[in-house]
Length: 121
Image 1 (tube, rainbow, N blue to C red):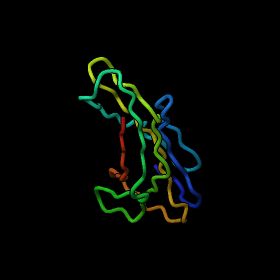
Image 2 (cartoon, rainbow, N blue to C red):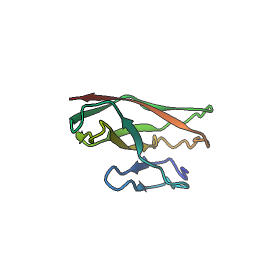
Image 3 (cartoon, rainbow, N blue to C red):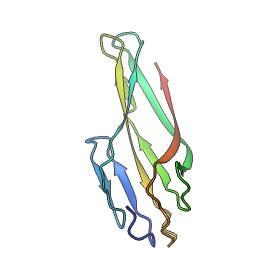
């Protein structure tokens, strides 16, 4: 919940421990969670190289909201190793920020950001 948008506030889901952290005037009502992707059909014990890039930094919402968040960054480990069954789990963390423009028209809705994950091996 954004209690005041007169300065930029942010919320982060930390990649290291999965904790949700917020600052300034953004209050967490329900903690976020890491994005989790299951990668399958790779050769066993293969090292995968991960690159995540934000494609659109402004979010969109399921319901019309005059205010949108900015997807400031996404975080992931640069490499992960596939298990003996050819499966790996990729976790994604990130940070969303408010505009800090003085308007406070964030509504209760789902907000989506667009990013690309490249995997090579």
